[in-house]
Image (cartoon, rainbow, N blue to C red; front, side, top):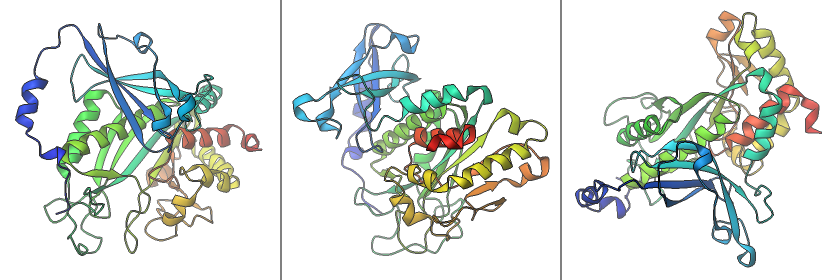
Length: 367
């Protein structure tokens, strides 16, 4: 079995003795933010005198941006601006998790703060009541970087029995998946479901439906909870779009989209119009569908393993090899949503949803 971290082997019974101590009227608030990589999350905790009832009651804070790839040491203080509050499933009520935007010394958004510009776009398109649902695939690894439960010096049986599988020889790491699911529910994250994926040790959870900026907020916190649960178990969750070379599926973050008019009778015509617009802006979308301008997705979107080619745009009903899939039920009912299968597992949901909203509202806005 792939190695686990030493921290996960510490005596949890001793830990629980301290965790069960009363904390008076005080409240622990853990601030969460996206660092300068645009992929990793950071966090730190402070004490408030009382339990905050709303996001407005949580004060701004700061951190050393020179240690998170976000500033130089000579001018390193960055601002943490609370934007959404959740319950804390690790320290329990009344303690909180709070997602933050990062601002630079001049109060402008940090380079990897895509939430600020996404929020502006979502305000402009709010009359469409645009709903998103994102399907986050991830792969479990040991701390040695080898996929969890894979043979130490080899490979498991080929893909086939693992997707939605059950049994010790098919499902690797279910404890992590189920603990993450409960943590999301406790926190108030809009988690929709979960399943084992095609590659062994690969899983997926879905978040949504969420309207507008809420999508990015909830997915980022769901990712934080995943990494935090994995930490307790001593394993690593990677969002690498192609963690294993060869005849193995990659990992995406398929994004489901609908507007109010798509959800109403005859909505298929609006779905088709949206897909036509997306096709015209395929290169622009590819550039923002992973944090490295399409370089990560280049390894994944090959036209094989249930993907379309990164170089081509395609759409079809029930076609998992297309850029955009219209679910069979949507094709039958002539209303509903479409699925953009291009975003990579490590995409920034703010950047993805912003791009889709811009193209839907005004494709010329890319100019």
